[in-house]
Amino acid sequence: MRGYSHGDRAEATRRGRRDRRVFFADNRKRSGRKNREKRARNLVGPNNHFVEARLIENMDDTRVVHRASLRGEYGTACGIVIRVGAEAVHGFGRKHHYATRGHQPRRDTVLFGRKKNRVLAHIAFFIIILRTHCIRGVRMIFRRRTALRIHELAEAAKRPRVFGTENTPFWSEPYISRHILNAHLDPTTDDATRRPPYIELGVEWMDGIIRRYAQPPFSLLDLGCGPGMYCEAFAREGYDVTGIDFSPASIAHARRSARSTGLTIAYQEKDIRSARFPTGLAAVVMVYGIFGTHNPRETRKLLKKIRASLRPDGVFICDVFTRRYTEREKASGWYARKASGFWSAGPHVVLESAYRYPREDAHLDRYVVITSDGSHTVYDEWKQCYTTDTITTLLERSGFTVRSVTGSLTGDPAPADPEWIAVAATPKPHEKTGDLKS
Image (cartoon, rainbow, N blue to C red; front, top):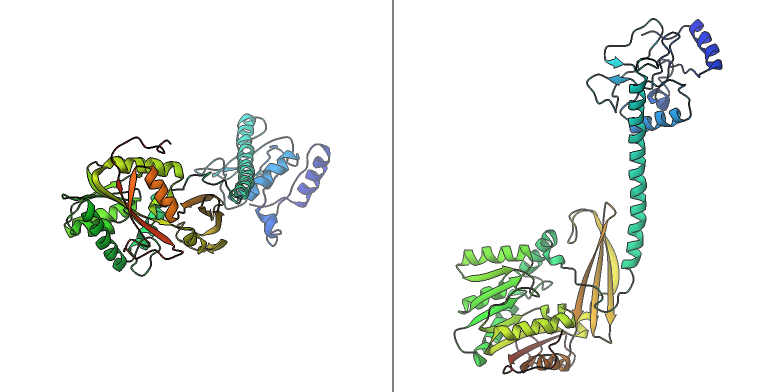
């Protein structure tokens, strides 16, 4: 397709002084200029009065057409080149096509003229403007949401009031629960549970306490059972075991393990705060600090349910945190992961904060996880710390008689400043207790 001659250019220039500006494009002369070659062109033929605003795939060029049209640089008429068989809004085309005097448009090009199809031209142009504004609107919304997230991050950095937030059940999220399961099954660490040798010693000591006070048959409920390590150990000792936990990965593993070993254990994937406990139990156990992960109100409700599920000769056994245990945890910090980690499947940053409440003997570990898309999630993990006196007083007021206080679930004597306290208690005869109100 040839370009304009010198005479055509002079004539068009004279016309452009009167009512419209004329843009000339010579692909061969402008091939060395990167941005100019990709910009939308506007050409006005001497006779047909067509205006061509060609769109290409790049959205930046669409915005160029939009801005130029608003400035009126494309004259009074509106025309759009649309490649046949492609999306009309995008106007795909890989070559420049121009409407010139004495030349018909190519077969794959449709021109909307000022006279015959002006309505269609304006509709198509309106679609382009709307599309551009939608893209800009989405970007503005994203910027506003980003600012809002920064504000939320600032709020997350503030010290909350004691037990002012709920524990975030991150162990019930499918992705995180798989990592927690891996920590449970790692025999070299006690990040999620005791190591196998300690579990064997603990079950041996707890079995002795239960048989001292309870009579056969022996039925046991493990609250917060995880992948069922304690449940299987008690089942091998002849107990009728029920385990409750709301970590989906841990319960799924526990069920598979019980089937593979031929043990009959009833597992429930539920929150122990809302789950219905079986009755007539010989023992209820809560190991590895599960008892101390609830606020005082929830703890009193839980003790009431435990007492109701036990037989008169039943035994409740648990271990609890002390202040010394929480003092060994680091105060605050942050780290970044370029790939998946414990908290997220993709790149993320974790802000860690630790808050101590000496007056209430409470501790909060807060984790703010920021993912690559700018969103963030706050995970709170509260710990209620106890001393020998406070745990004994709580159990006595909740209808129990404390039978044993040791430094661990293996029966070791408690040191002067322990990190853990293990307690065994039996229910008092049913009578009105004074501190069961929630």
